[in-house]
Image (cartoon, rainbow, N blue to C red; front, side):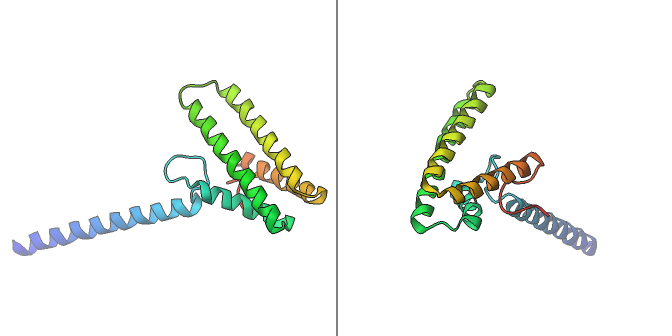
Length: 148
């Protein structure tokens, strides 16, 4: 009888440990797929979002240190403005008005970035942003390089 009790206890412990390990693996997978970059709830990291955007921008534009600093400041400020606008919408705001307001904010941010970049850099920037929007439309993360 003791053997059966011991066996049942071992099986329960093994099952419990495997469930815990499965949960940890799922959490790690989710963090790898969406390491704070998505706009979903939970563990969103604004600094990581800005870092990923800067990496994408720097990749083909060959920014000077001064340009990088200025663009980072513009993106960070734009992110904060949009975050505040989204929070305002949580209180039941008009989605269409919010969409238009965010579009206007993105256009203002683009104009600020245009002032910092050369004409050639800005053309590349616009191309990169268009590709990013297309990836988002197709269900991609909107970050990083082309999806394989």
